[in-house]
Amino acid sequence: MTALNVVVGISGGIAAYKAVSVIRELVLAGHDVHVVATSNALKFVGLPTLEAISRNPVHTDLYEGVDEVRHVSVGQAADVIVVAPATANTIAKIATGQASDFLGNTILASTAPVVLAPAMHTEMWQNPATVANVETLRSRGIRFVGPESGQLTGSDSGLGRMSEPSDIVAAVLDVAVASRDLAGRSVLVTAGGTREPLDPVRFIGNRSSGKQGVALATAAAARGASVTLIGANLEVAPPAGVRFIEVGTTLELQSIVNAEAVTADLIVMAAAVADYRPAETAQSKIKKRSDSSTLELRLEENPDILRGVVAARSGDQVIVGFAAETEPDDAALLELGRAKVTRKGCDYLVVNRVGWTEGFASDRNTVIVINTAGDRVGEASGSKLSVAHRILDLVFAAR
Ligand code: CTP
Image (cartoon, rainbow, N blue to C red):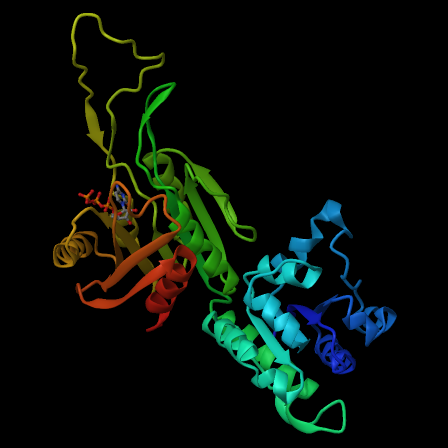
């Protein structure tokens, strides 16, 4: 297993002393461990112990390393985050997205999987407030390890004891491996919308923001793939950890896609590509005409990049196209999708509805995925990032 960047969060419970063994085991297995302790945690276990065992500085204070924007960088760099012990208070704070301390910021700023190892008295674990918080977190994909039944801090015993360090470490490594199911794969994503210049100040373009393509690049990178993102006029920043190439026009996009596609295992053409470009691009601003109330533009056809990639495909590359359509009704939308997948020859087509208020600029999306035969293989609805993960699940499912 390759070395992982593991953030070990520690909150303020007596089981914090057992977090030392979690850290020790991870470090001895070759992982790079970064401890984020709440100030209450440091009442139970000493900072020098945590620094010596983790071999890295411990983060507690939000106002430390401000120049390095450390309150987000630690979470952004993590491959997996574990909080052990996770107290009832910390669970409640994570469930409500609080960023009042370093640990809260780290979790909010991260797209890495999170594992929580709760430790508290039975009554607290069974309290409806905690039960609801745990349910919320589980529904967001956060994994729980324990708690176990056994001796608690006082003379009482019951459910609420933190799992043994080796069980916590095993769960963390499991989650990290499962979440990196695209390790070793090379993914090429196009995003945004191409623009075709009419003159130095005007263009023919479309309203694609690039958000869905950027979410796909983010999701693939978080799952361990090596990602190249080709962005045309993105309205959002490209994610950290991907190779980014910026283009403007369809012809520029085509030349970069053709060069990059050769080594890609998965090609996702999420970009909205201008089908036509002006036959002539004026070298100075086109002036308003005084002799006519109309202006005619002559356009010529752009190449179909996706069809070119399909024609040149090598080995068992997976090629995915997108189809943004304005059909109001699902059956008609799918009919257009089926015709398009046949015309393009790609393995999958992600069909979504766009309109004046739907699709492009939104942070959410609803898509139907069909295969090359036109059969519906799945659908997804939700944030563009969750839709991205589902698309990756669907197109890699059979591979
Ligand atoms: N595409 C492409 N090159 C083009 C046009 C589109 O590679 N010149 C890709 C897009 O990136 C997308 C898919 O083909 O993945 C479908 O794009 P779309 O614009 O829906 O298809 P068109 O063939 O242009 O069909 P139409 O505009 O008539 O719906």
